[in-house]
Image 1 (cartoon, rainbow, N blue to C red):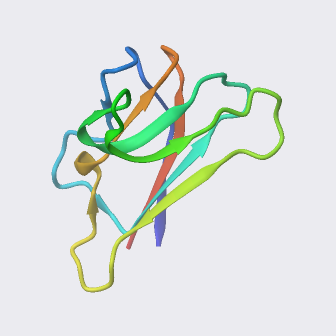
Image 2: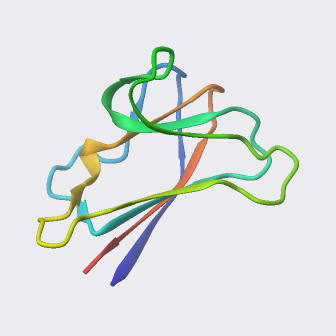
Length: 108
């Protein structure tokens, strides 16, 4: 498999989810999200239209790691026999402007 490291994906305006991609052709077998050590706010992984205030469309809440040490992660894997995961079907949001997650994905 080939890994693509998107690096740090930041949220400009909390409450306005940031798409992982706008290209429907970008698919993956696995998506990986990691909290970035040193950041201070919670981050959210969800589907387009998610609302972190009501938790509608939120798949996972990742807690900050402001002191360093262990950082929470979350992985989404495609089911066998499917065409994969479309990145445009996932978004992130954050409690603090300019914060985000480390995002990588794997393709065949």
